[in-house]
Length: 165
Image 1: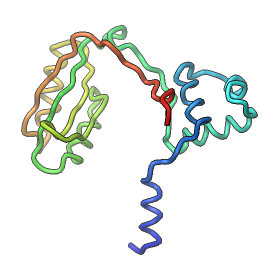
Image 2 (image 1 turned 135 degrees about the vertical axis):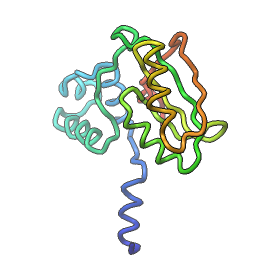
Image 3 (image 1 turned 120 degrees about the vertical axis):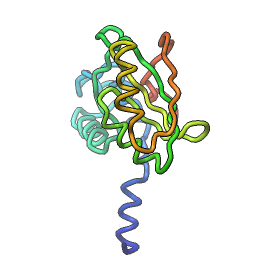
């Protein structure tokens, strides 16, 4: 790959900077994902068109998503757990396999005792055992798992947009 192509790839992977207006728009949308462009424009002091363009850019560039967040315990998914996973081989390959599983909702490559952390959301303990034993542990390269069952969710917050740069 030539230097010109390498630069283009590096540019695509580099994190993009958010300015104060972007952060404010994200925070407002985290509070109300259905806020109108008119309301957002008034809050940040820009035109509706400028806000629409910014929000579309944030979505297009995968800098944010607008999604509905459920309370799992209220939609028949009462068992949540984190699995610490040790692997033999490239953890990125196993992370990809884990990411394809329907009941795995988050996968993190990490340093320390575990190579990966994966969050599971299941119907109940029996379902959790099924997913762990039939879907997670059989993945080639998984050498060990340690399960951390959530007893109570004390805090869940997606409002990072309110943090200062």
